[in-house]
Length: 102
Image 1 (cartoon, helix red, strand yellow):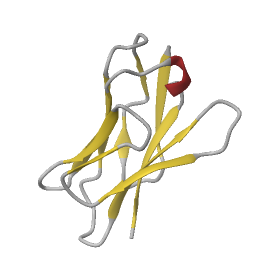
Image 2 (cartoon, one colour):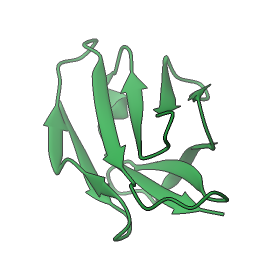
Image 3 (cartoon, rainbow, N blue to C red):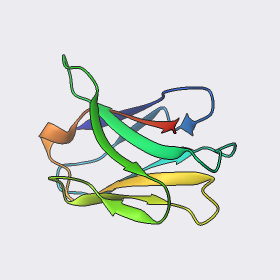
């Protein structure tokens, strides 16, 4: 199945398209080189025919995703982050967005 990713605003950059097979881990990266000290890295996903769903907000280090075998990691310099899905299922096929917010 396919996982699409999109930039939520100009300050972030993501790969346009990724795909994996069911059960094979996938890493979605996001670049945010101009992140401000007070800004959090936020990740969302949008399932087909649904509105965006908030996943997690991280300031530094890493945080486990709720109800999922995965996590979001923020680099030490906070210039990039990545969302790791350890064992994605068909139900995880979605558009994944990262964004910055205070």
